[in-house]
Length: 397
Image (tube, one colour):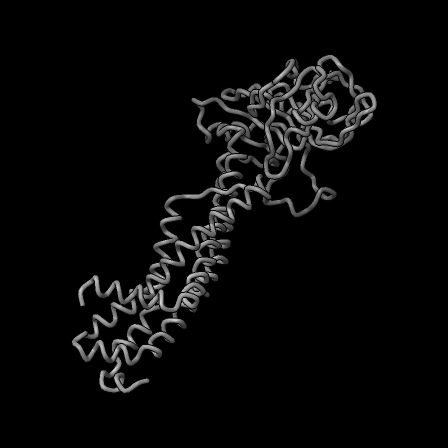
């Protein structure tokens, strides 16, 4: 048989049982669409999280109280010395450090006349805007010493919009946790980071934050080191000055690379797990093709016997049935991509914030996998057809 006759035989076989072929292809389509979509969502979430962490820059180190190896004792029994504004001031004097941001975090009610807004309150230092890359939209950020306790505040985008609308907030007085502050600036829109709305935030000096939340210790101190300073050398200097001030090593240093690497590993495992769940649908599709092709061989035994009687060898019979399995799988792949477009459109309509990142590589891989699954699933029934005895096959009804 030449390739034209073979192709005609294969497509005639697929089209002669339209409903059965459609159901088989639909099983593959669901598998292809689910694997590709779940992988794209996993890729999108990974990129979103890594981008969120990267927005603060690559030359930032977070210093937290306590060693990560000894966090199990809990706050009550902990003998770790608190991180203070004095520690932050000492770090600012280190060679190679450009910015220092003490951080204390809490939540509370912000009031302006008859309007109230609950949000995140961050006590930070005057370097925060430059260190974190948070651009000021109106007015200016704090200035002065790290230990200054001026009653001034800077509003995030959402906080400003909810309290003041289109009115200029600069110079207005608000109440934060019952204390009076004067608004000196607003921050440009930043969006969310890991589910935290960075726009629904108010920034006050770190000293005021400690007083407001009645805390002795800072949550962390962020430092930004200069580009011509190596990470290893600056870490040694930071550890040494903290040992000198606290009497022993009782802080944990986390670099941006550490955070990105840890999150990258976690998200890669998550993406693989999600893809594996979707692959179950592909397995179901493969079983469907195997069942259909086995049934086809039984139904067309006499036809196979006739082909063998007129000279078709085992290799030709094997190719015909494998070709039919591959066509069914590829048809499922095409339907799967169409289903994928439909599902993506629905997701964008109902969940516009869900990060989905498609890749041409994965789309092409989906079609390749569908063909490979058809080939693998068709091997057994195709082998059965090729090994039929021509004489017995001709006597089958």
